[in-house]
Image 1 (spheres, one colour):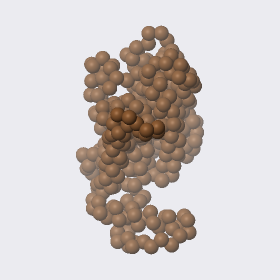
Image 2 (cartoon, helix red, strand yellow):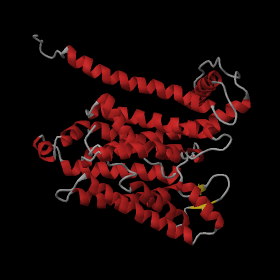
Image 3 (tube, helix red, strand yellow):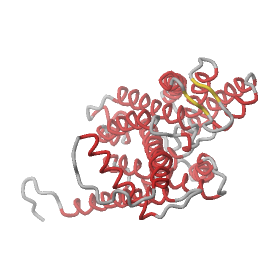
Image 4 (tube, rainbow, N blue to C red):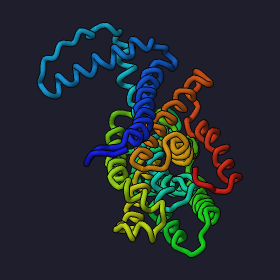
Length: 375
């Protein structure tokens, strides 16, 4: 078949169209799940009222922010108590789940691509535990916050110091992993074992801090190590969302570079890719994302491992589509897990990290058994 200059083959358009359709389908699922997540809880709010409250509140805030006078036909249709629950409690928690899931998933995908290791993720490489130790160190030793056994488990009075401390320790773990990845004949299992060692070291450090904590601090710290979206509020959300969004944009802009690295370092260098710089910056950004999520929400495991492999089976290995797909999948998975965690033992709320571990552990074992092959 003859093609005119600049004409794209129909088969290629169909090929990319299926990938884009899968991503858009995931976005639609995420929107529906967001409404459902806000609906469920100790107080059931019908999804129609949730959608009405969201649209009405959004119009009011746009009018106030830009000094507009857009008509709001939905004003007053939702009771004040339910509107307050939606906007002040459940919406920030749901958005935190979306942002955290997106960040952990894209960080895990970046680690897998940069290190060319299908078992790499913030949790399996010990980065999450190192960040958790850094956050606990800042709270208990550097005085970055007060710890309470009731209400919010960690009240961070200096979120910048907590995030920086978490990032520093996550960075130390990243440096070790990068050094190991440069060793000759480094296999996936060697890197995972190194991550286990680093994670164990970080857990030991956290236990050391717990040993010298009083009863309230100890109870709060144990609860804090369980990843939980319930502690998120509008104050923390921008601090988490902005760095995660910037990192995701960077990873997407370098999607061609990651495609080249997948073919091997020598091939990537032959195509003009600065492999060392891409690897260093990518790991630094991934560590930063993990540190921020852990500093505010605690340790949430296996999202960065499971989601990239799930998306690969549907979309393939092309990072132009794999990165957006992994972002959507991570947001959907963590938001769904948090929704289930809130209704599974109602009125008690189960930390979301417990569910992600239950889902992620079998996948991790499956990847080990099948011989580390790329999905």
